[in-house]
Length: 151
Image 1: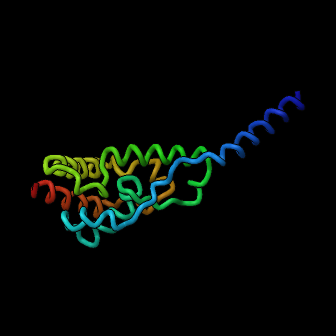
Image 2: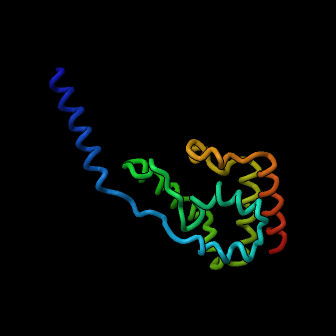
């Protein structure tokens, strides 16, 4: 029985090692892709800092990857979250959105942040700086509501 268990553990270890050679494509672009969004929505420096630390990793074309993202299967799990996040809202693609869509997205921003649905809890586990204070939530909500009303 011990020999059988040892073979299973070795098999699992080999599978883990081989899996490291298969990785999803990384979401690495340029912060320049956010220029149109920032120019149009004119967030204050405080709001820009909040967006940078709590939103852009999953909602833009540029993710800041930490060390643990180099390991399979974590990298696939992260890639899935990023794809989902960008499907919902991609600040890097802001200029391609219609006025109606921009208005709706700003409404979703303030609603999701106000309800504390964003940033999502799995992200907060390794990004404690993204855990927004009440003051930061108010800044984002007020800014997003103002932008919503401008469309």
